[in-house]
Length: 120
Length: 151
Image (tube, rainbow over all chains, first blue to last red; front, side):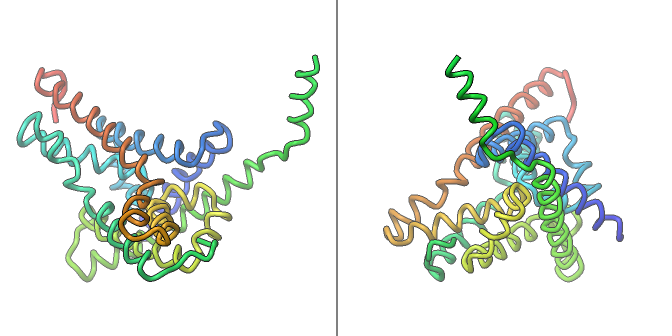
């Protein structure tokens, strides 16, 4: 039970280290780094390698942006398994809807509540 | 020759990126954010009957909510300055990108400003995430259809 906290810290930290290295060593902009990680996550799920990582590290694998790519592919594949090729398109947001909808809802609420003073 | 000299000079004078320091900071910040996520997931598993796998959805939403508050009070910028990729890579960084763009463009109105700019930074992540997921899922579905691999 305690071990999932240690693995989530370490795995989550390591994914961020990969991101930092992409920025510092490969000289990518933050936006390019995030896109690279998302694409990596979705490819990893194509091979079925991301779910074992989630079982191993819990939030350490689901909180980094790589899990967004993983969830997109996962939803598409699950739906494709049931309905064939059309499921690739219809199932895409099945799993990951909460992240996008939360971002939209809290984005608007944030804009209603807060005002920029140049420090956002 | 002159150009070579200039390139050399520029390399010497520009400040070196403290890679090791940045990496350690990213590791600690990112690890801590994921650890907090793990505690939130535990909360949902214990009190709301989610399982280990389904708990990630409410956890992500909660993390984005926290990120909204931190962004609004100007604290997430400080975390980013310290943690670099450690603050950008977790889903809170995605939330921060959306919320900060929304607040930043509030002065241009809610439709054109907030609505039009909300996904200015996060949009590329969604675009490439969706497109790569489409390609990967398409390839895998076709491979399964032709009997090369199985689900």
